[in-house]
Length: 149
Image (cartoon, rainbow, N blue to C red; front, side, top):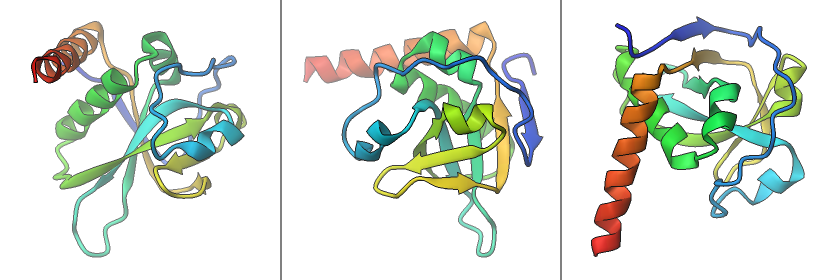
């Protein structure tokens, strides 16, 4: 399928140059983000199966930085979640600290939780232009509907 590229791994193996702060991160629930370099986006995907651990879907930091649009990045990750073939029943947004990432670790921040090092399964996602365009259009449609209300 041409719309996705997902690598399944237990560790992040790529290093990235400095990632700049995202400007469009919502304030609600991410108060702790000011205490670190939480610059790019991921989501925790839950299968709802007892004993099954969460997966962390991590958007390529360069894409996250390039788009600099929280809702679009989340939409891309939701679409990747569907394309993995795993039956996720819910998900939770997370921010990733680029300083830790660049040192080979994943410091994650979930809404309403304290930051912690992630050691579970990571699905690293890098979308193509077609999927990015779809996500932008989808988010814009939702925003237009909200504006009419």
